[in-house]
Length: 325
Image: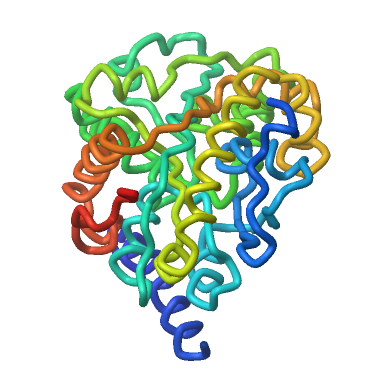
């Protein structure tokens, strides 16, 4: 039943794409893209938006909107309403394989953001999860695939040695932890930090980024920046400028957490400034492009592909997937 749901989720994204296609630092350092190359960018709430905070808060050539869910990105790219988007890395591959005209991945912006939280005080290693139930959201999405890989590489079979109980949204899981209904949960940032700051009886047990690093040959790359190919072909200078600007934006977030936290609250990315201050460093903001990007992406996508090919759009992308100016 779980696999059927996964296939349905991917199919839903592809159907939406088909429907819409049938229809149609210092601010002084910012490179100002020419007016006729104004860039429309989409980000998602949470870690994928944090790397763009400097661009969102400055006077520059970028119109950035925060969308409600990843499923909204594909249709907007297909319609040309969005030029560049921050999306889950496996979704970038889905778009590459299925969006007419395709997309190119420009850079990676977020490494792992997943954490195991515990109310029992008994979880200090992956092996300690044996016989336990982990509450999480995102059936058929990257968090499930990452968790399954870490479990299996530690000799634990999901749904045999460790049981996964899925819920609709992260706030629901946070409430279950607070009520004592759920003992162990997998949550991404900033939800993990929110729960830890609001509930003394919940503790941080495992950082899945660290656990992934112990068993995988590649980094846990959760967010990719993609550009629709039509825009890239028509406006190569705008894309080149964006790469410089986005790198500066990532550096700003890394080096100015307090200011970034204020912007995260201002733009509705994280509701509470104290939570933002604690959560932003844990979102592992980064700027990875070029050869390193290609190596990380293909390693990560291969892990997901081996679990379920549809999770990356049915096949691994070719070298045309990567930005090579």
